Amino acid sequence: MIIALCGFMTSGKTLAGEALSEKTGRKLIDLDQYIEQKEGLDMESIFREKGEAYFRKKEEESLRKILDTEDDIILSLGGGTPMNPNCRALLKERTKCFFLTCSPKVLAERMLLLQDGRPLVKALLAEHPNSTKKQKLQILEAWAKEKLQERIPLYQACSIQTIDTSIWDIESITSQIMGGF
Image (cartoon, rainbow, N blue to C red; front, side, top):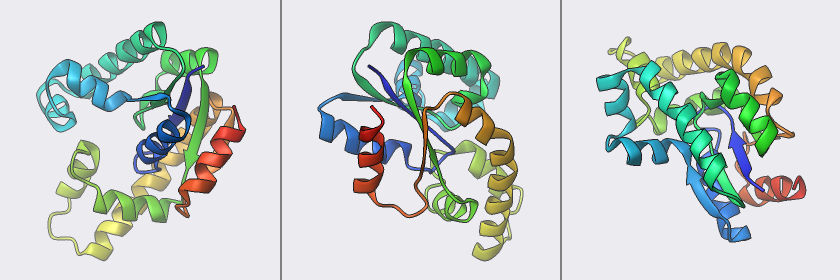
């Protein structure tokens, strides 16, 4: 059985995946890291040199390959993976996917703190170079709200359970996931 974790960037997929891997003894595959290894480039370089469309194509190919060759793993997805209808269908059919959700305010705080390696966040903030920290948080929160309106139904469409990670309690989060499989 493949346990997949989906949700917006900085919702806690990687950290929850690492904790689940440790608790269950299952191998963890982070889809973004998998793509970076195959491409020999970090995420920012892939987006900058080859574009988002290229990345999304590689994302689907990589997801398909992992699902065809792996079993009994924890799979941490990129925030945009479920936006692709083919990826959504694969996740629904071949995994037990959990949607990690979080308030836009907390997402904004985490995105500002963890913006390195997140080309979409860096590009958004680059449009506002003289912004204060408070303004950057407002920009990121508004962006997260907008994106979540479009993404939440798609995350839910491929998931069996939604878990709120706004208050980071890894024991509670992993217990809820483990209770669902």
